[in-house]
Image (tube, rainbow, N blue to C red):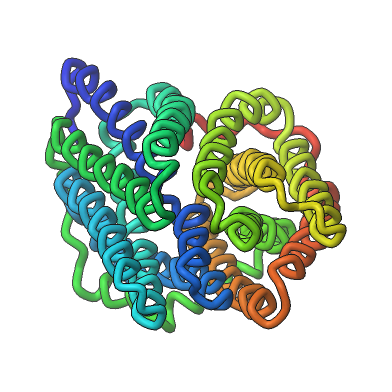
Length: 426
């Protein structure tokens, strides 16, 4: 472990808080779930490609989790590597816009798919390193404060910047408006990397893994056997029965963004409205769900899934009645599902800490990630095919139905009152 002095810890907290806020702004303005699918539709990519970008990103994340986690954990210092990942993500966005400038649709499709794969790979590497770095250098209470400041401060800054860029570029052609927004996002990714370098990181003493251990951990067969073995545990089977329907709920944000892009990709205020609504969702979700989570994780899950189902149903009704031409309707829908999905994500992670036995947490978490990500890749690909062959509204209809199933499953499978999670897991 790191021998962190009080002065160093005190200095690192504001630096890392500032970095997390700047990073949140960058991710919001260049969001792979909202902004990039919107741009894919506006650049006239086939709807299957635009929808399948979600699957491509998840495949990259799965590869990082499966093959790179051990080497990341063994790395004694991580701040420079995290700074490099921010620069790589910024470079990916620049490459995507450079391809879009050519106007050649096949080239744009290939570059967007490649960029999404790299972003998924690099983003998960960054998450693994950042989680380890925060665990070593920031205390539990400070981590919690940082998290809510990141959502609030990052959301406010993203809203202000999106509106400012919109005012400056609203008379410009669509590509100019879009590239300016992405350019601001890239600048914030680079600034985030520079702020990361400003923190003081002490080298952690990590015992090198034995070659035989590394080989075993990286063995595909042993990983699969360990994952399948978790189904022998009753708590794991019960948790998975609750967790699997939530995969479809988590896809609501990118597919709600796709149906908005389908209707408003040529609008001068379409992209700005999507960014502002998603940023507002992050801003509101922190304080809102913190209060509910204190009383019951099940309440958050049930209310969140109902919010997604109700919003999707209203959106579908407006769509089939032919009165969904107002951009504010889609902005409100994206805001609601962003709030809901953010709350569900935090509640299910906290609930996992309540139900998973301490000695099975790591293996259980790895098994859950493997199954849910694989299912998410397959499901998002199927929904993308449905959107391409028919219309995005049918994919949204499936998400509405799955949200109702998830609501019923969460209500039945989860206990109404949460347990006190161990302090060591905060």
